[in-house]
Image 1 (cartoon, rainbow, N blue to C red):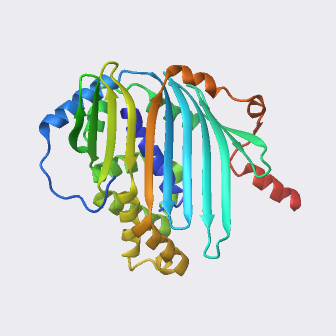
Image 2 (cartoon, one colour):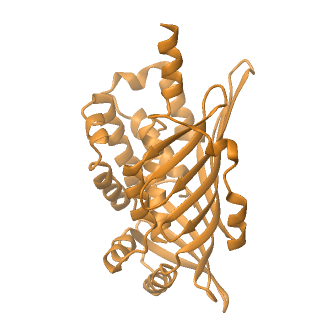
Image 3 (cartoon, rainbow, N blue to C red):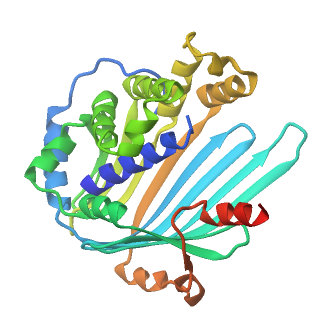
Length: 319
């Protein structure tokens, strides 16, 4: 569960940092289910012990005229990670013209390096090696200690038991959005690049909208555990309210002129009233990892320093 929380933080951070501004409306006061919270605590303690898993994850973003999907198939083995993924974006303008972007990618990870394999504009395979990211991912994947578990449990506002049997348990977990944001913001502030971004007025404003979004959103995770093995079988989450509340905060801010530009305001209105952001994770048979072997043409990828390296090279050649 700790791994999922950390992966969720990394995922959400990435979405917002590239400029993309759990169920409906503002959180209301409610009585905490102490019995369910204790069962949740026990479940977290039991399931935190596994190290080797194979999983499938699908993340879907929807708004008028735009669909985005990010799909992962990966294997975790102690501190090693292998991922095969696919990114899809489909945009339709008001005249019915559509644009599609389809990008496959692979990620390999050990305790030394993370390597991202991706295709450029000419569909040639490139690879980027990142020791810094490797350290972060290893920390994310490692089995949490008692202090880390307590920190994660502290992000939970309430728990409901949806289903209980001898073999499985399904919990609906409500996240404390403000605590989640404060924890994620503290991690982002350690990154010099993020610190530099916050010096920009627009970036400052966006971080403020993010804080309002987390503060006002109802964030939920549904989690099913196999009690015979104490392993996660399925997990789903819905971040729609988070996106909607962040966009609403931007629309209600009279101090930033960029929000009032027609294209940006129209985009924010679409996000505030019609957007959806959902994810689903299922854990597979361990033997499924055999299907994750990287193709030879991917392993022969050219090493580059950034995701834009091939584009930059082509521009320099034209000069």
